[in-house]
Length: 193
Image (cartoon, rainbow, N blue to C red):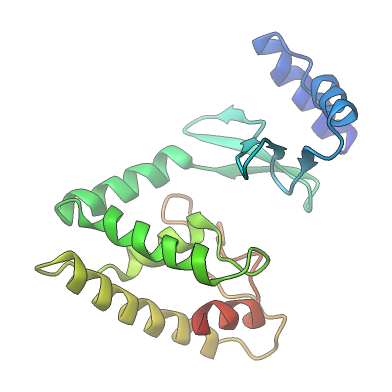
């Protein structure tokens, strides 16, 4: 972690009375195999596959800034805006959007390996952009999946090399590519399941 990020974590921690870098360091030493540093968070593993991701965040107007280990800087994100976007689709769908999303995420969890599984925010965005509101949840599910496959195939057609990255914009934060960690090869593995 860079000195700037450590300094900002320390400043954020003082606001809530915790020395965040020291606390995370202590937790890592005491629970070496249960505390893992991830790209944007620290994951604490508990018993029975239960884990909690702790994301340090700094308020930045309507958005928040979170650390990016890969970029070595704080990046903007807008979870409240994303929730609002999902809630708008949910209201228009008579509450079926969340049901369709849960079914598709369940399929992902059962059929796609953890190393290649599409992150929840990206999958929810793909579902939301492709959502088809029909008379029943079953019809909405089938038509949404068909639309998603067509959308993903269209994304893949614009990629020429296995390392090319598709672009799926965060509906709540212009310029953020939610597929930044996916490449042509990984996206294809999701499509064929």
